[in-house]
Amino acid sequence: MPAFSKSGSVQKELTRRTFLAGAAAAAVTVCDGALAQSASVDNIPVIDAHIHLFDGTRPLGAGYMGSPAYRAISKTSLPLMYSPLARPAGIVGAIVVESSPLIDDNLWYLEVCRDSPIMVGVSGNLDPGRPDFGQYVAHFHKDPLYRAIRSSHFYSADDGKVALKSDQIANLKLLAQADLALDTANPSMNLMQANVMLADAIPDLRIIMDHLPSFDPASDNQQAYEAVVREMAARTNIFVKLTEVYHPRLTDGVIVKDYEPLRTRLEYLFDAFGEDRVIFGTDYPNSYGVATIPDEVALMKRFFSIKSRGAAEKYFWKNSARVYKWIKRSDDQPSLT
Image (cartoon, rainbow, N blue to C red; front, side):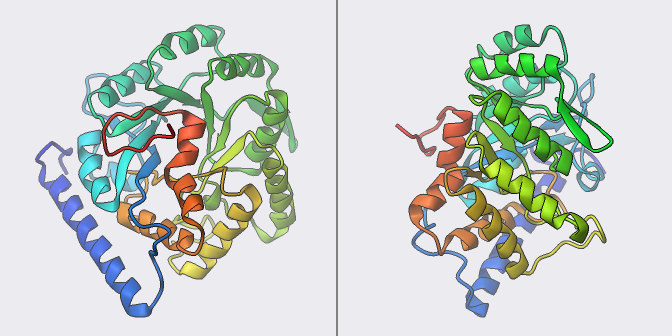
C-alpha cells in the first residue's frame, strides 16, 4: 500500500475507523453500566508523552518505522497524521520518543516538531557510550524542545548479574546536569534492576521506565518482579509510563481486553509508585492494530474515574510537565505556572 500523505486515503480510513471505534466504545460503556468517565476526568487536557515519528520516504530513509503491523501499511508517521486522530480524544500535546539509532534524526525530530505546535517535546537518541556524548548533549540542549533522550544499554548482564557501565554513567551525569530526563525501554528484569542502580548512582537524573504495564511476569519470576518494582518505587527519581496497557501477551499473543485484569495491574503499579510518578502515553503508531487512541484514553479515564481529579490531572499532563519540563506551545495546552 502507498505511504500516507496529507490527504491520503489510508489516513482518511484510519481517522474514520478511529472515530467509529471511539463511538462504539462509548456506546458499550453506557450500555453495560460501567463508568468510563466521571466529573474527576471530565475536560482534562491530555499530553501524550509517548509517540513515534518517522519518514521512511526520505532519501536517507528512517532508522525506525514502527511496529510490523504499521509498517505493513505505511512508512510514515508525522504530526499532521497524528493530530486528527488524537485531538478528538482530548489530546492537546505530544512528546516524540525517538527509537532511531541515526544521530541525524535528532535534528529531524526537532525540525518536524518545531513546525507542529501539538508537539511539545522531543526525547532524542544519543548514545552515552560515545566519547562525544557530552558535546551532543550541549548542542541539542540549546533547543527548548529537546527534553530527554532514550537509552537502555547503560548496563551489562552476565550470568544474570547486572552491572552499570562506568563510562556511560559518567556521561549520563552530564544529562542530569543539563536538566534532561532519560527514557528507558522496553521493560525487562535486567533493565528494571539497572534502573534501580542508575537511580542510586545519579539521584538527580529523572529516569522514566516506559511501558511498564506491558511486562508480563511468568509465575516463576513473579516474586522477583514484585521485588524489583518495590525497589524502583523506593527511588523517587524513577517514574513510570502506564502505557502499552493493551498489548499482545508474550506467551500467546493474545491482547487482553477485559477491564478487570487490566485494572488489577494498573492498580498495583499505581499503588506502588503513587499519583506523582505515573505518566500517560499511547505509543502511537506502535499501538496500531492493538488499540486506537480513543481506546487508550478511554481505558485510562475509566481507571482514573474513581480517583480524585487531582490524581487524574497529574497522570494525564502534570507529571509529564514536571518530568520532561516540556514547553506550552498553544493556548489549549495546560501549564504548571
